[in-house]
Image (cartoon, rainbow, N blue to C red; front, top):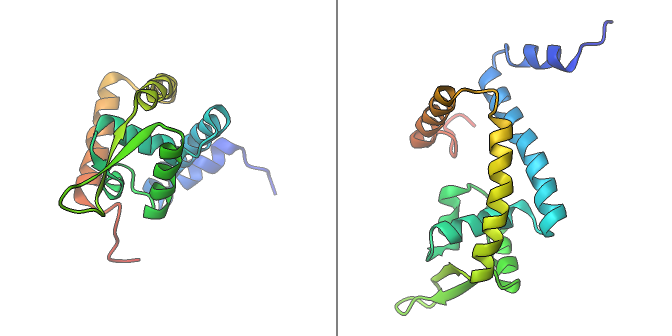
Amino acid sequence: MQTETAEQIRDEAFSGDLRYLMAVSHLVLANNQVTNRFIEQTYDMPVHAWSALYAVVHFPGVRAKEIRTLFPRPQNSISRAVSLLHRRGLLRQETMQDDNRARHLYPTDEGVALLSEIEERIGARQQEMFAPLTEDEKAEFLRLCRKVIASGKHETSEVL
């Protein structure tokens, strides 16, 4: 039996019945592998923590359970990430006056500075990853992603 190259294997996988999910999974998993390694080695935190910090910096006052809107991860992963960020002084929590259980999250100056550093590197990664696409293709890719996300079909299933 002839050994297939990585390109041949991908071509076959991306031509089959599951081609769309295989292609999306390939992109997401490959990028996660690169990004996770960078975040873990450089900042000694799981990738869930930087994404939670992103949500808190860009949406001050967000609650931990609302972070799932931006990053659909298990709630316990988000809660652990928020706890880590809080312990490191990268965010602060404020309890709502009318509901002691509801805590709103706000970045500290250290959290804003750290996210700025991370975003610079992740922005370079984004440019690197999407370099093969033209600006029009990037815009079309984003439009199609937003369309799938807006449908809600990516987070729930009627068939599984």
